[in-house]
Amino acid sequence: MTTLRVFWIGWVVHFKIVSRSPFAIGVGATWPIVNASLAYFMYRAGGEPKTLLYASLGSAVAGIWSMAAIDASGAIQRQRFWGTLELLIAAPVRFAFVLLPMTIAIASVGVYCLGTTLVWGRLVYGIPLPLHDPLAFALAVPTTIVSVPGSSQ
Image (cartoon, rainbow, N blue to C red; front, side):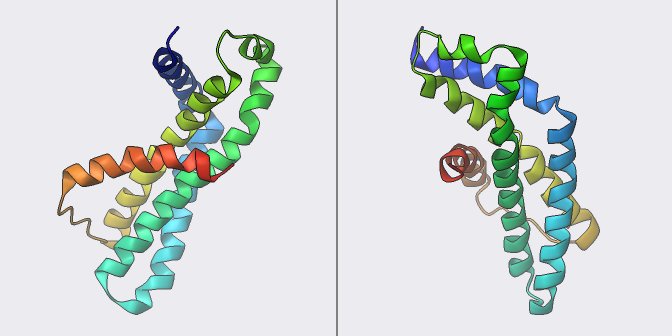
């Protein structure tokens, strides 16, 4: 098996597992709302819409990071509970290549946090999202997601 194929299949499987987890969905739906509301009330005194947008995006990244930090800590424990940890360790690829797609899939579910934060900020607080370069924004989101698991270790 090629490394890229191991990564892709691992990411798809773990993304499906985590995206169907009630805990992950609950965290992805509630924490961004709390973070965005707190950021709004803290930065509202500044009165500048750009400041509120930065606070909102910061809340989204915090949601992605918290998703990765909390759910990734239980990922190995879940594998052990399901009886698949032994199979993952005995896989014909390095164990790091088994763990990497798992952590990136968990951070990918953090996209729910990004969407929740931006929608909440727009609908409830009227925070604009002016995308001057939508392509750059679309490229920045996966780059942020891939960088989060490395920073939380």
